[in-house]
Length: 358
Image (cartoon, rainbow, N blue to C red; front, side, top):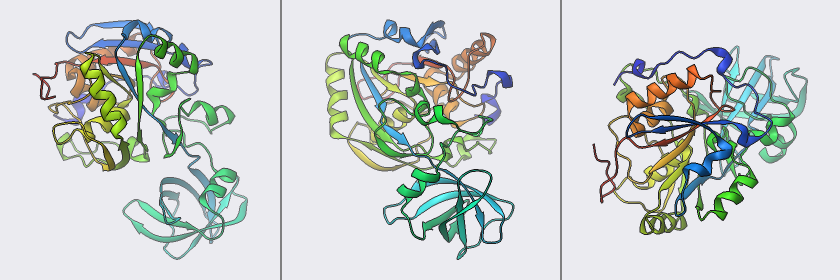
């Protein structure tokens, strides 16, 4: 398929810039992938579409305050977005500057965009493609991000981060630090809804996928099969595998909360069956790919021509997905990270081996 097959017109005013006052007050579009039928509801009513015996799979990654401001030794301004913290104390990062910093130089951290430099320096060790390897010269990353870090709001949110983003650009169940973008489908859940879900006999479990800045990487190739997918670290434990097995035995549905949970489960089942997995994944789920584990997904609305709308199209069918997006625009749904949500069921069922039936 071609990149432009996943394009849709989106008015700028539908791009949510701030979260709603209450997490569960967002709207919920329910897409039946088998028929293309659409229902309009609210996230607070999610349990109307779940049933006892289902299993919700959450991504428990926690967003770090990964955006930093600073200056080069020459005085030029820089903006730093941490991509990944490494065990040896260094980090891969994107660095925006009028002229890229050279290896061997130092970047000095500033409190904010005023760029009044502090004494905290980051040594530029090397560069690979778009990423720079940075190492703090004195303090730890924990200290630097704790004092100077900003929440890494997505590029389509046209404002600076503020106090509300510290909690609202984070799921209520986030616990494993490492993401530089939120698993946004989970932002709609609050503690009350989670308690209600469990009280109704719906099981929950957690995977970890540390979302990277590559999640916003555009597809530049016209033929989507030529796109090189970014890499993200994830973990699916034996406990998750056992929970999925138990869900199958009671004829429940495995419902992934977010595309990151989808990618985690399907990566762990890449050999044809679900098993524990810990490591990097570059899985690209696009139309034509089979889903071996996931029976339904909760997700936000994604950017035109993005790998994420391609994932949803692979699951619910291209025609049904694009029609649902047009309906969402017509009905003035809020889009992207702080926007509304979808509950999506598949275009086709799985057979006993886990492969999708066309």
